[in-house]
Length: 462
Image: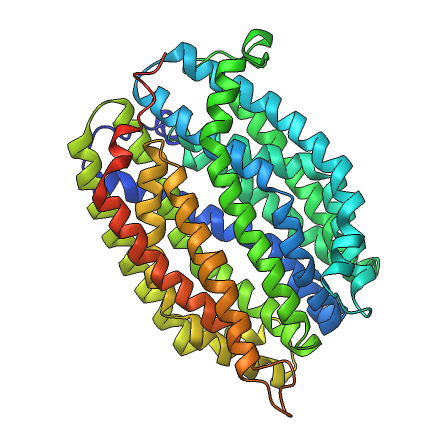
C-alpha cells in the first residue's frame, strides 16, 4: 500500500540519474497522450465506419477551429506548469499554493468566455473556410456541443498540467485512461446505438472530459501536504495572475498561430475536395500518435528543467537535456520506421475505401522523417519553457508556420495546377509541413545553444 501511495505522490526530479528520472516521468505522460489522442481517433473511426467518409471529413474540418478557440487554456496550462514546477523545486509552499489557486479561478473565467464566444463564431468561420455544404451542418453541431461543454476539457488539461508540474504524471494518466474508456463506450452507444451521428461523438467527448476533470479536482484536494487550497488561494491575485499569463501567453499565441496556419491551410485542403479532406483527417490522426512521444518528452523536459532551475541545479539541467533529447530522437526514429512499414494497415482502420487508404499512405510517407526533427524541437523547446523562456519558442513557431509553411503550401499548389489538378497538387500541404518541421529543429537548436533561456528563472523574483 505504501508503494502504491508513493506511485501517485509528487516526484522530486532534482535528485537521481537524469535520464532515468526523465524516462520514468515521461512514460506515463506518453501513455496519457496516446490515450488523449484516442478521443479524436475514436470519433474518427466510429463516424467513418458507422456514418461515412463525409462524416469523417466533418470531424476533421472542425478541428482547426476547435484548436484556435482553445488557446486560452493552452496559455494558462503552460504558465501554470512552469510556475508550479519551479516553486515546487524551490520548496516555496506559499507561492506554489497561490499559483494553483489562481489556475483554478482563471480556468473558470476562460471557460465562460469560450462558452459564449465559441457558438457565436462557429458557423461564420466554417463558411469563411469554404467548408463544403455536404458537411457544414455536421461541423457546426459538433463544434457548438464541444464549446458549450468546454469546462471539462479546460479543467482536465490545466489541472493535469498542475499535477505534472508537481511531478505526478501517474494520476493524470489514470484519470485520462478512465475518461478515454468512457469516451469510446459513449461514442459507440450514441452513434451506433442511438444514430446520433457527428453530434453524438461531440457529446460523448464532453461527458468523458468532464469526468476526468472532476477526478483531477478530487486528487488536488487530497494533496494538502504539498500546498494549501482555500478560498484565500483561489482569489485572483494581480501579480500572480499577470506572471502566469505573461508566461503562458506566448505558448497560447504559439498555439493560436499554429491553429490559424492550420485554418489557412485547411481552406487550401478544402479546395481539393472531400476525398483529400478525408485523407487529411486520417493522416493527421496517425500523425497525432506519431507525435505523442515528442510532445511527451517536451512536456517532461519542461517539468524537469523547471524543478531543477527552481533548485538552482543548472549542470543537472544541461545533462538532462542531452539525455532527454537523445531518447526522444531514438523513439521517433523507431516510430518513423513503423509508419513506413505498417502505415497502410493503420490507414485501413479509418476507412474501407481503398483509394482513400492509398492516398493517405502516400501523404504519410512525405511526413514520416519529419518526426525525428520534431523530437529535437520539442525537447529543446521544453527546456526553454521550463526555464521561463516561452517567447523564443513562440517566435520560432511564428517563423516556421507563417513565414515558411503557409507560403510554401500555397506556392506549390499554385505552380502545380493542371487539368487533372485545377487547384494544384494535394501533396503541397504535406511537403510544406515537412519543411517547416525540419527548419524549426535547426532554428530551435541554434537558440538553445545561445543560452538566453538560462536567465529566465522565477524563484529569485518576489
